[in-house]
Image (cartoon, rainbow, N blue to C red; front, side, top):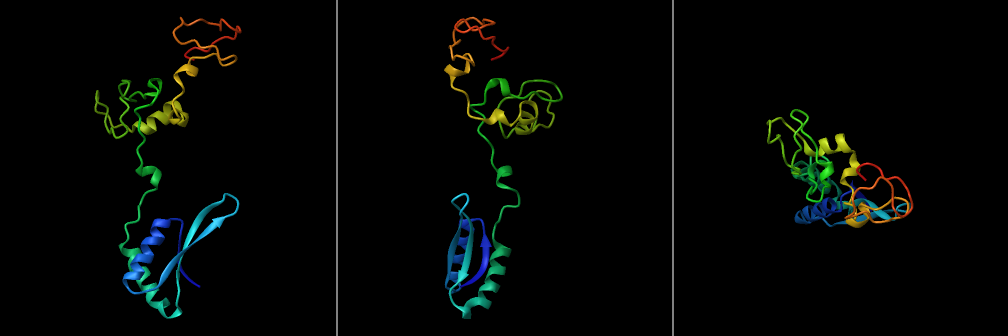
Length: 170
């Protein structure tokens, strides 16, 4: 078995095998299983015959030079959907203090035209927890101790069921 390339990306390994096949090189992908997390962590591209090994290395160099591998991490390429963002987590413009609309691609404040990064502002002003799943509308307004639903009731300072004080804004 002649491993010529190892990658954590199965699609990249498969693309290399196809690229090699176009040059009549017999190759395959073998995955490695991490026993601790029970998932595939790396994919080896192997050449089945030793005779093809030198040609395969040359083709690999060509593949790597022409492949469109991302230059930035995937996290930086993905924009979250802010449609379900709790309105209390909408960030304020650092320059004019206007509450910004939940548009992840916004680059400038609509009020003062200052440059903004909505995602960074949300994290800076509210922490990464702001991106957690939105709370259930029923339990969101419930007593933390007994679960008594406060929804639709005036904002009492203590729970009418168990007497636990409510936090402001809870």
